[in-house]
Image 1 (tube, rainbow, N blue to C red):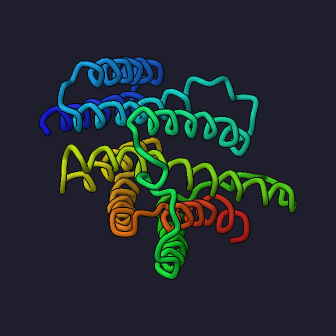
Image 2 (image 1 turned 180 degrees about the vertical axis):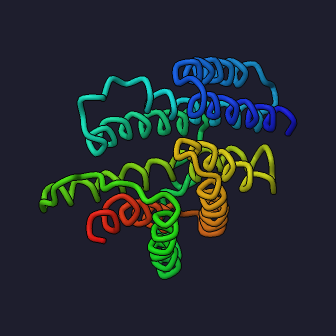
Length: 245
């Protein structure tokens, strides 16, 4: 538990440096954390801790990939379409290395009516987060092709891949190592990566949403509802409200 908290503090510190002080120094911190977590996971003899540390390596990887890749010439939508497949492959490789089956990380369809209710919660989350952040729309000109591309990028990318990483692989590894502390631990990790928005209120919201998503996945064993909720929330946040209101 102490080591898990230490890594949580280190990841938080790296995110603070990245978003508030010096981008490249922050990335270097994340690279060091990534290497340390991978090496540490290979040296630890306790099996749950080994799984947790390897799963945690996905967190600095998310930031490294999003910052280091030379994507300045692309719009944000296309950046999503390039970055998230890489993160999905990394999460899938980690899942296989940890001997988790797809069903163990939430690739199932269970309690479908409840999943649909959870999916609709994304409308509420998206509206609240828009009130907090008020971002610009992802596309400047509305076309059917552009709209479909945005929705796909947000649901498949920010929705599915992020939930696979956090509520799938990392939460599954955390439950074995941290027990009842796993859900708030993963929710805090998820919130820390939103320091990029420079909003304390948004961090509080994302932490609460992360707790809710973690509870849903823990209870149902499925990522379906939280994936749709996450994707719907971001679609409302970055596309529907900014463009139409």
